[in-house]
Length: 240
Length: 112
Ligand SMILES: Nc1ncnc2c1ncn2[C@@H]1O[C@H](COP(=O)(O)OP(=O)(O)O)[C@@H](O)[C@H]1O
Ligand SMILES: [Mg+2]
Image 1 (cartoon, rainbow over the protein chains, first blue to last red):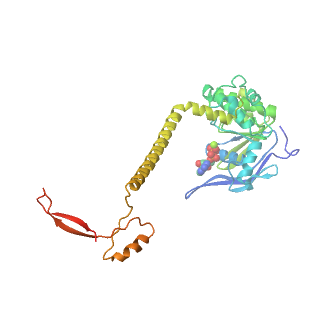
Image 2: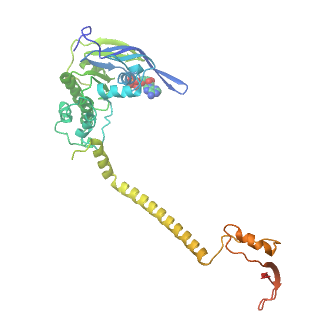
Image 3: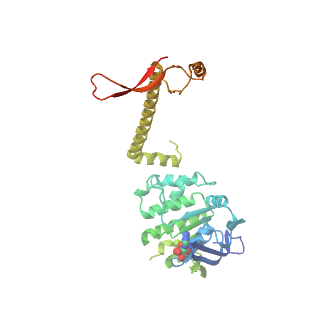
């Protein structure tokens, strides 16, 4: 883990706000979020459903744009970039993992990962990415031949095969039972340890927060609480 | 085989949907076949009618003039596209025709 002060943050957000307009109705999903992510950090974003976690992650990952405030990746101002620049930012710097795996069903695990390494600037070898998540023996299986947890690990391998600067995971264990969820968290933990990727993990499960360096609790579109775990708990020890 | 993963996906998806792909292909093929056949028939009919008109010297247009003196004939013949000029008077008249009880109206041409 890196200490603030010695390095520049990977991502920085100032007073981020997001308003969704649906006809006459305005939903304030974010109401002024300040945030810094440091190189090599593992941050868990905790909060109840509807608190704005996904919205925040999507803005940080360049999938969505903020209504107000600023977000910076190094020197890139994400809030003022056009679609083309955001696409390049996502492609070169960000790995996403979502609750649903979004694998292509007619491609094997290896091919799903290769799809990304084909367009990445400094990719890993797809097989190596899958071995990192413990799927070295399942390279040629199709998604339908893999369990939910295994599919999620393929999705993680796909996200990190391009060696992103930031790994953003939105409820990666949301659709999994706790045993399988732990395996997925272990994969994320191992990647964080071996590649040093700055990782943000969204969850509404407070237990998972123990594996983070830092925990941000989001509520009602604001960061309600920030705490630093004196020690990270290995994913293997988590039970819920 | 070193296909791009997306090409591989395409090949596999097509193979998986081969029944539908085949059916759609057949529908398109029969549609195109029908169109070609219709166009060919239309062309043949046009050719046939043109050949018929030509062979029987059947005019595209018949035109009559009223109260035209015989001297106009040469000027009418000079009009572009006029093939034949016949100078005669055509009038309707009631005729007695053998085997018909009712009177018969008929146009009769009288050559001068
Ligand atoms: N595309 C959208 N259009 C309208 N409202 C949205 C949209 N996405 C999210 N919201 C609203 O914004 C709020 C925050 O949503 P979200 O960021 O998905 O929360 P979380 O991920 O913490 O469950 C919710 O009230 C949600 O209904
Ligand atoms: Mg969410």
